[in-house]
Length: 355
Ligand SMILES: [Zn+2]
View 1 (tube, rainbow, N blue to C red):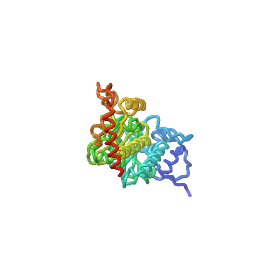
View 2: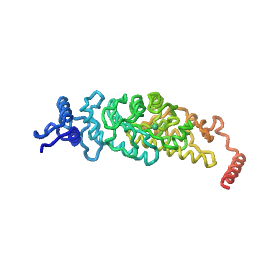
View 3: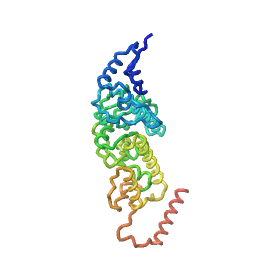
View 4: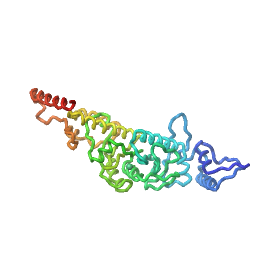
């Protein structure tokens, strides 16, 4: 019996780095496989090694992006070959892994949340709609152009892709983004409260948070409001909705921003319930952290601000204030009597709370 070669078989051969121009003569090819082959032949791309992104995984290193970035203008066959290349397959697996971590940490609910990675000049890989982020398979992923048109993939792309794409278009360093609904951070987004600053170094170094007003999820209006903030912030709380983070390093780094934000929101909620004024680091200490942050290439709207403006937490309800000594008051020593009185009152309150 003659061997039947389908489009999937050809894509598989390309992925394995095999030459699809040297197929045995006594085979039957499906019509879509024949079209695919003809298109590759017309473009001189029969050899796997010249198909963008199709280099097989070597030495445990992640497969590299094609030397010349792919665009939505590439032919359908080239885009399909790219979508099934070792480079994209590796990223698809990475997206599934991050989806699993989001679900296991209860950062997503139902089919909520979505992930996108820039893979070409105007191309992105993204998660499908209507699939739990904890149970995605690499074959569920989609390839879209920067207008949100789906180019490859069997499942339909996420309805919130426009937001990710608008972020990518606005911020050239944006490589990957993660959107989810982690309960503590989303609680802040629902209350419309920007998380206070100057409390935990990890948060100060890796996250720069802003709040975007509410619009219907998935609409261009929502995407624009988020995109307006990506210049100076890498984590955006969307009022009454959730959070989106982006990274210039990759999808895992974008996900780490989410872990850092959620742990931080949880920590300061606990701290604010302990009956003592929350302690903040001083502006000079924050300045040190901002230097590290700038060295890591992470944006922050506070670069270049005066020290006294660095820890402004006026809007944070539990009464956290900037730990800056007003000018002229620096030399005045603390009044030991007043301090003792404050301590007695604090102790009494704490004793009452414990009782
Ligand atoms: Zn959402």
